[in-house]
Amino acid sequence: MSHPHPAIERNARASAEYTLRVAEARAVLAQAAAEFGANEANARPRISQASSLGAEDMVITHLINSLQLDIDIFVLETGRLHTQTLELLQQLQTSSRAPVTVYYPRNEAVVEFVARVGADAMYKSLELRKSCCHIRKMEPLERALTGKDAWITGLRREQSGARADVLLVEPGNASADGPARTKINPLANWTWGDIWHYIAENQVTYNPLHDAFYPSIGCEPCTRAISLGEDFRSGRWWWEDEAAKECGLHVAPTSALPAYAESAKNTNSKTPA
Image 1 (cartoon, rainbow, N blue to C red):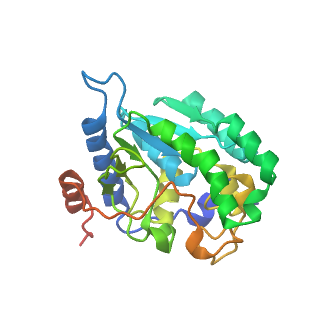
Image 2: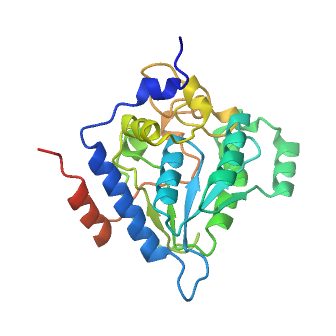
Image 3: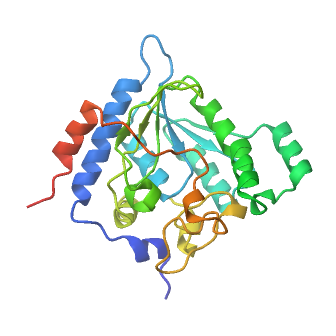
């Protein structure tokens, strides 16, 4: 008889450092909420979780809710998400203690783009694919982050070579493109097995596409299932060169860890004897 949760059966293998990594993530999130939560000058928290509704993000949301942290959640609904992802979004909006806000691309920009280059222009060139990502993700992301001083992502070092140097906390640098925002990656040190062990242990709801060999889930036209042994992100923009496989939401970190993240790392990431 088949397992009712194939992704859990395949992947839930905790690392030796699992307990320490959970403690590390909790400490980083709690400190972030303390630093960027609502205060007398700001009625709402100045920090949000950016959730793609993938396995990592569902773990982070569970941590935020279980710790009752003053952190908002937002989802970018690009207009091209899988049916399974949209159904999970509805479940999350109903069940989450933390408020969940959905941001959509500007309709007029989508209509103009599709009319000019077609609904599936992402397959035609890297330039067109990135233009589509800008309209459907980057511009809504900037609106989602307006008024925020920090944001939380599910980035992990293990996900791809481009993310191998992801830090627990990346201090923001102001630029012509926008204000400085601290970027927090509480699962930076987690393995894929850690993610699924946590999901199994805490009965976290997840996207059923993971059961069908989708480790990384984005827009439907730009995501496919992967084969055994393929890279985690090989199912994203699979027709492009490996070096191009980012939509622009995440850039390589260049800054050192702030003091509180370094303290959490030193306290909670030591390998057990």
